[in-house]
Image (tube, rainbow, N blue to C red; front, side, top):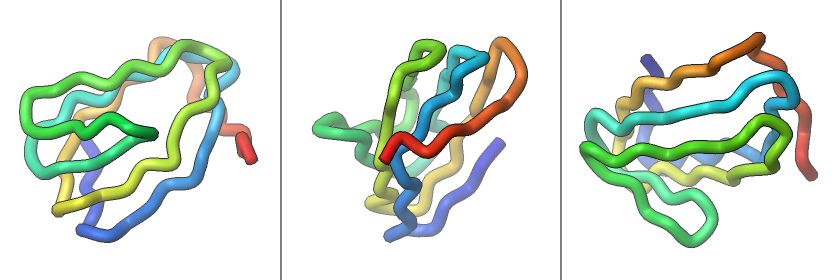
Length: 75
């Protein structure tokens, strides 16, 4: 589980060894041009660049990876 305060930005990244899912429990955040709110699911395929994330309101999310957590800068 992760929690981000409003205004937090997570830079663009790649997870080369795992697919990633974020289920939003509360709050609002934006990734690229899509807004995620309570009950929505985000998915990034293994090796796919994603983000930046911007928390529009405090966000609580459940994050799941189906492999080792590795993070590479996508910038």
